[in-house]
Structures are given as C-alpha cells and as structure tokens.
Image 1 (spheres, one colour):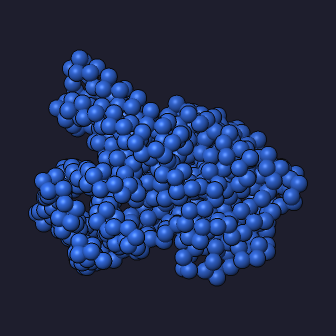
Image 2 (cartoon, rainbow, N blue to C red):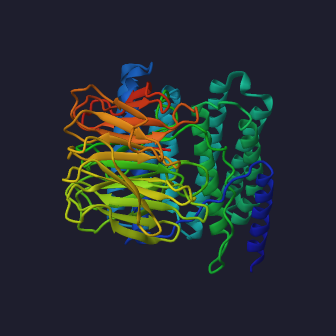
Image 3 (cartoon, rainbow, N blue to C red):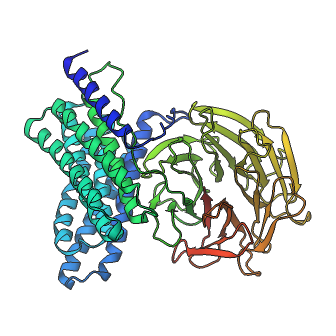
Amino acid sequence: MPPTTIRVLALLSLVMTAAAATADPKKPVKFKPFGGISEERFYQSAVARRADQLVVDLTTARAELTSLRVPPPVRDEIAARVDRAAAAATSLATLARKTADRGQLYRALETVETEFAGLNELTTRNASASPAFARVGYDVQQLAAALTEGDTDADRGKESVARLAGALDEQADDLWTTADHQLGAAFTRDADRAIRKFARAARQLRRNLEATGDLAKAAAAFPAVGQAWGEVVAQLDRVPNLPAGVRDQVTRVDGLYRRLGERVAVLATPAPNPGVPPPPVIGLAPSKAAAVAIGAGDGGGPRVRVFHDLRAPAAFDFFAYDAEFRGGVRVAVADLNGDGYPDVVTVPGKGMPALVRVFDGRDMSLLAEFLGADPQWAGGVNVAAADVTADGRALVAVAPDVGGGPHVRVFDLAQGKEVASFFAFPEQLRGGVRVAWTDLNADGNPDIVAASGPADIGPLVRVFNLADQKVLTEFGAFDPNWRGGLWVSADRGGHIVCGLDGGGPPAVRVFNPGQFRRPAVDRLAFPEDYPGGVRVAYADVDGDGVPDIICAPGGGLKDCPVRVFSGKNGREIAGLRAFEGFDGGAFVGAR
C-alpha cells in the first residue's frame, strides 16, 4: 500500500475516534442494487433528482420575490436570472435521464453554475433573507456532488473536493445564522464557538487543496473538520426542542460533511485497494417527532412533501419522478437503513412502470431504486415499508392498484432481491391490493396487512405471516355489503386503521390487536357527503405515545386537506392544506 494511502487511512481513523467521543451513531445498512437497475441508471436517476430539486426551489424562490422589499427593476432582474437558472437545471435533468456521459453532464453543470453565480450575486445583495434562495445554493452544491459521485479522475476529483469543502464552509455560516436567529438564549457561547471553529476547519481544507492540489493534504485537514463537526453536534444536541429550522440546516451540513469525507477517502485511495472507511455519521440524534410524507394524487405531478412538524413548513419538498409525469405518487415512511432517521419510499401512480425509489431521511438523497412489478405494468402500484429488522432486513412490499390482481411482492433491499410473492385474495380479482406492515404476533418479525381495492370481496382485511404467507387473522372492517375497496395502515404493535375508498362516506376505523370485531375509533374524516374516499397513515403526531390517524382525501377537495385525529379519542388535533390549488387528492405515509 502506498505511503499516501497509509497516511489517509490513519488520518480518517483519527477522525472516527474523535467523532465517536461526541456521538453514538448507528451504522446504516447498505442496500444492494437489483431489480433491473444498473449502476449507470442509478447514477442518472440521482443526478436528475438533484437537478429537479433545484428547479423546485428556484420556482419557490421566484414566487417569494413578491414579498421581498426590493425595487421593481431589481425584482425583475432577479426573476429573469431565476428563469435562466431553472431552464439550465431543467435541461440538465432532461439530459441526465437520457445519458450517463459525464462529459456532457459536466458541461451542462457548468451552465447551471454560471447562471447560479449571476443569480447569487444579485440575491446576496438584495434577497439574502429568503429561505428559498438559501436552499437554491445548497441544491447547486448537492447537484455537483451527485454528478461527481464515483468519478475517479484526479483533476475533477480535486475540483469536487474543493467545491464540497467550500459548500461546507458556506452551509456552516448559514447554520450559525439560523442558530443565532432561532435559538435565542439557548445559543450559548460554546455553541457559537463550535460552529465558527467548524467553518474555519472546512475553509482551511478548501484553501489547502486550492493552494497545493494535494489530496493528501486535504485528507490531513479532514480530521479537524470531523472533530469540529462532532463538537457542533454535541452542543446542539443539548438544546431541548431544537427548532425545525436549525435541525434542517444541521441535516444539510451533515450531508455535505459525509459526502466530503467519502470523496476524500475514495480519491486518496488508488484502485484496486478496497477503499478507506467513510466518515462516521455524527449528525444530531433523530427527532422524536413523526415524519409525515404526503404525495400528490392522480392527475398531479409526482410531488412529495415531508413534514416533521405539521405546524411548520415542509422539511422537504421534491419531485420523486419526472415533474412532467401526471400519475401522482404514493408514499411510505420507514427507517429502512437503520440509521435512526425515517426514510421515504415512493412509487408512481398510473402511467409509468412501477419504479420504487427510496430517499434518505436525512437529506432526501436517492438511496435505492428498483422495479417493483412487471416492467409492462403501468397501472400504478401501492407500497408499504418496514423499519429495518433486528437481523438487518430492509423490507418493502409492493402491490398493483386497481386493474391489477391482488399480487403482493416483498423485497429486501439489504439482500438485493425479492423474498416473497403471493396473492392476498382470489387471483381473478382486479381491484388491486393496499398493503401495510405490522407485527401482529409479536415475534419481532414484520407481518403484512392487506386490503382489496374495489372488488367483489367486501371490506376484508387480512394479516399474513411473512415467513410462510399464512393468514394470521382476517376480519371485516366495515359493512359486509361494501364493495368499494379500502385503504389500510398499521403500527408495529398490531393496531390497524382502515379508510373507505371512493363512493361511500369518508369513514375511518381503528382496530386494536385481538379486538377486530369492534373498532376502537370510528369517525368521519371529512364532511359526510364527501365521496372521494380516505387514504390513511398511522403515527404518533402529537407525541403522547399513542399513534394518531392521518387522513388524506381522494379527488374533489380543494387544496387536498390532510387531517390528523387523536389515537386516544378520535378528536382532530392537526391539519394542513397539502397542495394548494390542487384537488386531485393525496396519499400519506408516516412513521
């Protein structure tokens, strides 16, 4: 092994030791590629996803211009710059879906960065108070990082490391500003010093690389970055009820920190060496608040909004697939990689193949994608995800929606393969099947909950043991004459929540384990005459230790209101308008 590699290994070992003193992170489960998706295709998807995100946040920033106190001519100039940057990002996203050619993609990135540089100059002077413009800068940084992922070219590698170090410096400054504004008296002198120290360490790494072009010196500076970040985490982790804005900014910084460490490790290690361990995950402990994901319904774009606090703005707002797709998107939430952060799983509605995607709960970067059904099926699918099991299984269940048979397929992302396949109801039915996960028999292994869509079977709910697909229990959730289908969710403790699909009253029921003949909660989620159906999720939103009922409408209600009802008494405890100006309904997932 060359001396440079030995030094890098030793240096990264030091930063791991330093970080371990300030945090006790879980080691994430690694996913294996499978399901017909090559590494090249995954790379294209990751780049396109980041370019799409840039377009989303540029669009939001443009909408915010009217609220900024800037002269009209300046506002018009910024708007024009935003439009040019958005057009460049859209072109890059389109290109990424067509090719993995790095030369073409890098040239497209240069155009994006040129347009952003001009926009940044204007907004720094005139619109620096806009959160959306701050996110745009982060998006450009993440897009560049996604583009350089896996690139072992030395010159481009040095440039990518320098760019990431600069981004880390900028985001550290933004963290200081956010903490100063939102923490008040809780922003202690020690926290202030820790964040400033971290920014200086990132700045020094960048300067070393720019001055010398020596990756070994960049690696030598990385332990100081990791140690300083560990100190920041230790300080902020002591703040009770850390504001969502601070936590979100910590997430951005942590994502860049991890990417930087991984790039330094890969680039400083010549092939065919098996590689240097990546930097430790030392981000803040996950929030105890529920993560609620909302996806646009049929007729809408594949837009997903993720909330950690339903009273605050969305923590993440993105398109899971091409923004031009109009089949909507279904969502599930679970800690699939076992790092303590709920991840978001998406599947498309009608109009495209059943491409399942998993997004990292820390920063919504793409973790995995695979085909969850026959490539010829484009009728839409439903999805459910289970937290990583004690033996490291990362389970996702996928089933066709209306028009397809009741075929449930289960995939283990850690093993990279399908692990179960069965029909939940008579094979000839064509109402599709809605799925959820629970542990009904309390054996520590997830069980599958299944309910049919509209079909001649009645409101039947079945729970299957994953190991042998035998029925553990089944029950009728509503009037046995109902043929309109159900939506279903559950928690790990065996509680099951059901909502009627379209055509009947917007009724929701919760059933406790072992008491499936009588619902514990029985109420209407929306006005009695609303016929659009109720999609459901189940999670502890109010922090009282009891899962709450999260309800989203089918089509027909303006702004797609999402309502949350207490799991204790059925009373409404929260609500929001999921997608203003859209009445095509929504899908929900939560943990």
